[in-house]
Amino acid sequence: MKKTTLFLVSLLLIFMTGCSLEPPEWAKPTRSGDIKDMKIGLSISTLNNPFFVSLKDGVVAEAANLGMDVVVVDAQNDSAKQSNDVDDLIQQGVDVLLINPTDSSAISTVVQTANSLGIPVITLDRSAEQGEVEALVASDNVKGGQMAAEYIVEQLGEGAKVIELEGVPGASATRERGQGFHDVADVQLNVVAKQAADFDRTKGLNVMENLLQGNPDVQAVFAHNDEMALGAIEAIQSSGKDIMVIGFDGNDDALKSIEAGRLTATVAQQPDLIGQLAVQAASDVLQGNEVEQNIPAPLKLVVKE
Image (cartoon, rainbow, N blue to C red):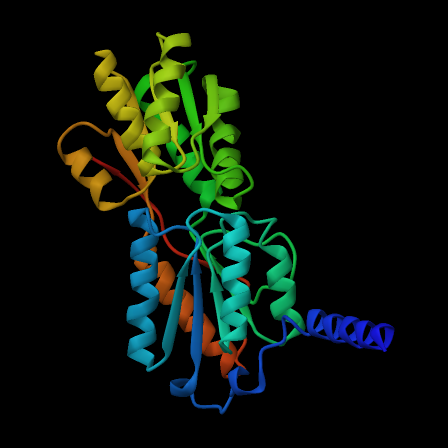
């Protein structure tokens, strides 16, 4: 009797495990054909960064214009948490997933899960390495990196000594901004040091403090985002040095810093526009319309006027 009971419990556990990613019937996407009945699941890498807050606001505002509901989850820069968050969104029966990956590789598994359940996925700002994604809505990060390097060459000349603060390892934006920067820098500049500061202001400060000790004659810094750039400026000001700093994103704090004469420049994105374009792409996909696989949002270099 005990063996039979144990066998039945084991079968039940196997069955439950195999079905754990399938949402219950009441939570499955309705797909009634009316966009106003649709629900968007939005997974943001972190809401502790003004850029991604603006991106989220763009999604929420455009969804409201179209009469769509949005469920927002914050991964807090934790790729494991983000995977669990997206699983939860699937369980809630969202009709489409908008994902801003913390890690482009780590997110692939849940993208593939969504694919298997017929839930379309659109990525924002960063791509997913595997799985089927209907569209990537992002700025041209490679071009942005090139713009930053070209500006340094223009201002300081060839051979200028530069430090590079890199973003989160594994994020597509980190790779692409670095690639564009090095397309120019490896030929026309002297990159004396580079280190990841994970797109974080405090880490940007700490990393910059350490790198300044070993590179006291550095002339410029390129940071993969404004948060790290603003942290680097704090370290530079404490050292009493005068070093050019270029960021990436164009968030409010960066623009204010440029006007105040502290941050030299930023490669400005339009995160709210990225959010709007992602919702528009989601609406098209849900209505059976084709969308471009890469949907660009324009960039511009902002300096003090």
